[in-house]
Amino acid sequence: MERRLTTILAADVVGYSRLMGEDEGGTMLLLKARRKEVLEPLLAKHRGRVFKLMGDGVFVEFGSAVSAVECAIEVQAAMAAANAAASDGKAIWLRIGINLGDVMVEGGDLYGDGVNLAARLQEVAEPGGISLSAKVHAEIARKLDLGFEDLGGRALKNIVEPIHIYRLKPGDGAAAPRADAPQGAVKPAIVVLPFTNMSGDTEQDFFADGLTEDIITELSRFKELLVISRNSAFKYKGQAVNIGAVARDLGVQYVIEGSVRKAGNRVRVTAQLIDAERDRHIWAERYDRELADIFAIQDELTSAIVAVLPGRVEAATRDRAARKPTENMAAYECALAGKLLHHRSNRADNVEALRQIERAIALDPNYAHAHAWRACILGQAWVNGWSDVTREAARETIAAELRIAQSLDDNDSDVHRIFAALHLAFDDHEKSVYHQARALSLNPNDDLIVVQQGEILTWLGQPDEGIDWIKKAMRLNPYHPERFWGHLGRAYFVARRHAEAIDALRRITAPDPGHLALLAACHAELGNGAAAAEHRQALLKRAPEFSIEDHLATQHYKRAEDRERHRASLVKAELPLARAKPGA
Image 1 (tube, helix red, strand yellow):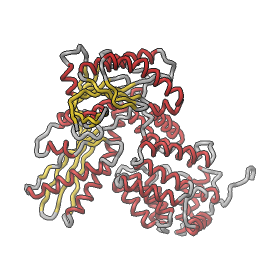
Image 2 (cartoon, rainbow, N blue to C red; image 1 turned 120 degrees about the vertical axis):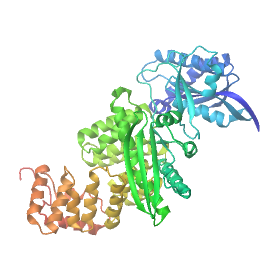
Image 3 (cartoon, rainbow, N blue to C red; image 1 turned 90 degrees about the horizontal axis):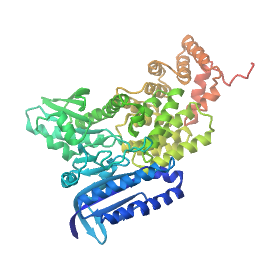
Image 4 (cartoon, rainbow, N blue to C red; image 1 turned 120 degrees about the horizontal axis):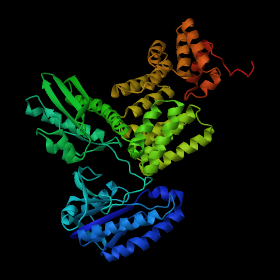
């Protein structure tokens, strides 16, 4: 196959899916007009050849890096001028990436890393902006009087090595986008440095390296993290590293480092997460284990470390976002804010969570994770009676949002987790189990997926297994939400372990009516009438309209006997069977 060195320009329309969703016909006409009036004349002027054309993007070959950059500058300037004259919502923004590299030629098409890298450079460009590889920058730096921003090495999707990127400054070819120009979701990037073998036994290197590799693999399951590849991370093996320099070289914000020390039949592993930008430790932990089975220990330690890290990174990233004006927050940061508010589980925070997640989607319409969480937040509102929509309308709205998320990324474990929760809410246990199994296979270390496995098993009539999964989720995330205690209390109740259920439910600082009903029922089963009456009174003061029939309608038992036993316990606690009539 013929090969040649050439310059590739990749351009893509920002927010294409949103534009098509709002006005498919109008968007197509507008794109055709911009292509004919702006793109084609400028490509002809600078001798660029289109070798691939999609609905929302184009790949162009140039014989000169200078010509490619000059053309990109004129294209962005012309698009900015056209946008300035456009009415709201009718602006077309482009991202442009330019790379100089070796390509394979087949007929009129080009393939290979040279093309792929141009596409990835386009993805990290700002709307109206231009990103260049270091090779392009080296070719044009002394030939064109332009201002550049050196972004350093960046990890790019499906590119093994970090890529040194330059960005044209606004006014030097990159148009300054309007405030409402869509922004892409920016994920936090993290590198796991090879764990240091402190044992003095070179044979233990395999354990330290295996642990590092497993952590990299398992962290990569979390879609909200950009994890540097093993090949890049292991370049630092055996070196005394400067954390700030490593972070700059790899384009990451967070660094994980650790050590392994073996003594006799025990092994000690330490791990720490560092915010490289602020040069401070976010989290550190030490693990001591007996070396009965070194591979089992490796799996256990990997799971323990990986389960904590994403939550700590989220918390650190929220802290970063809090130091910025809200209007400057990227789509990822809006999604983080929405998720945090959702976990607070009250009406006001649910409303604000929905606003934040919808802003994330507006900034990046192709953000699958945000679409999945919009469904989750809408589901929370419906389940808790915070919205006025009907049961079927709620189901269709939530399902439609999840279908969008699934079409964008069927391998996002959160999409399947939320699908499982949706089907459970509507008592479709078979579909719930299917999506839950898919979520668990995609990310077995996500505490929200693991705790939901325990919930679903409880509803299926397998509470003892459910208890084990819920406890595992609590071990995975020592910083777990308080609601995990509610799930554990329910599982103990269904397993008829009433004293343990009470102990779990007491851990909830602000019990809701459902928790109070369970506490009353557990005390009644244990023959403690005074405690049952105390919780019954607290419940009816909080929710005077409470009735056993209404409450059971919100429970998702698959087995009739589990539902009937729950009813009998509530009756024993002397809770009202039916809702009191007005004036009664």
